[in-house]
Length: 188
Image (tube, rainbow, N blue to C red; front, side, top):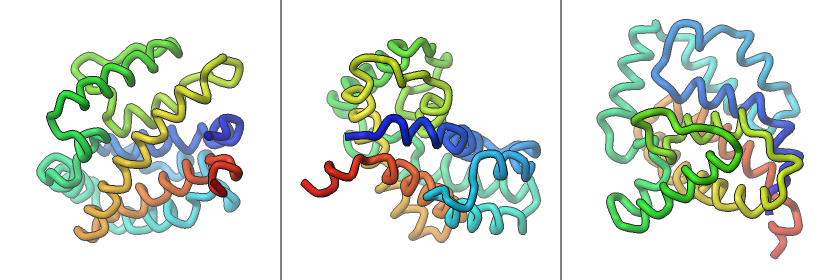
């Protein structure tokens, strides 16, 4: 089960993850974004700071080239979280429809031309949605987090093989949502 209160405590960091996982722009690397989203007690702090430190050694052009080479041209680094498990199977379409419905339930409209399993969009949803007083939210978020867990596992392994700085960012993301799993669920 997902601890929705703890997940809510980390909303700012999900906004940061969404921003960093989209095509890089100069303002994305302003230190204030990092400082606002992470303090030293955050579960993803060490990994996100490792990512930040590596990215500071590159120019914006190099970061943009690396982003495109990683996420646009490497099939095993796709930012579509159901792709790894289902590729183009019928089950993927069903999962995408469920995600779209989830976003709409919480009042968020899908951007034109984007699939609901796009990792930056999923992070942005967690950042923007208000779920604390919504009945049924724990069950709905269980599906969302299962998709994130499965998809980012495969993505993380590919980024590690490619020695990408984005490995640290995705590792920090995984540590963040792992910290939101209720402890009794871990002991079962």
